[in-house]
Length: 285
Image (cartoon, rainbow, N blue to C red):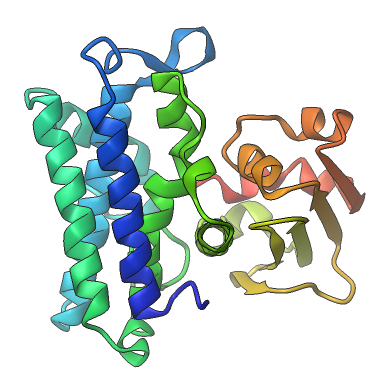
C-alpha cells in the first residue's frame, strides 16, 4: 500500500493512536518521571510525551494553514536552528499540565489528523509548504505522515525504554512497519543539512530483509536531499540490515552503527566514512 494514500494514512494514524492509548493506560504514576535514555539521561517519559504533543500540534497547524492557502507560521520557530530551543520551550509550557491532559491532547491531535487526511485527495496531499525545521518544502502528505511516524517510529523506542517495555513498533503488522519506515526516510531526507554536506554528491541505499523490510535510497547534493523507494544502480554506500527491527533500532539510536556492524546486525559496502557522517548530516536539530 502507498504510505501516503489518504485512507492508508488515516488508518495508520488511528492505529498509532490505539497503540498509544493502550500504552498510556498501562502506565503507573512512577513511570512518568523516569528517563528515556540509559544512566538516567535524556528527557523523562513525561517530557517526551510533551514533545510528541507539541510536534503533533505543529504539524497539524501547518497542514491546516496549507489547506487554507496560508503560509506555515510556527511561533518561536523561524529557522532550523530554533528547533532545540523551541522543543524545550514547548516542554516547559506543558509542565503545569497534568500528564492525563497531555496524553489526551496528543491522542486528540492524532484523531484530528486522521479525520483530516481521510477527507483529502492524493492531489491535495501533494501540495507543499515551507516548514522551518526542514531544508526543503514539505508536502501535506508528509505532514500527515509525520503525525504517524514521529511518535510511531522516531520515538517508539524512547518512550518504551522510559516505561521498561519493548519498542512500540513490535506491535505493528509487517505492512504498517514498512510504511512507517518509508515515512521515516522521507523525514530523514527532509532533515538533511546542505550546508553541512557542502559540495557532497552521493547516494545511499539502505535495505532490511524479512517482514516489514524493504529498500530505500537517499540522494545527497548541494541542492538538498531526496528519497525514493527501491535500490539505486551504483550508490556511494550500501547498508544492509538483517531485519526491520535491527534497522529501526539503528535509526532510533538504540544501537550504534559500530555495534550493529560488530554484532552482524548490519553490513555496509562503499564509502564507509560517509556512513559515519550520517548523524551529522541528517540530525534534525
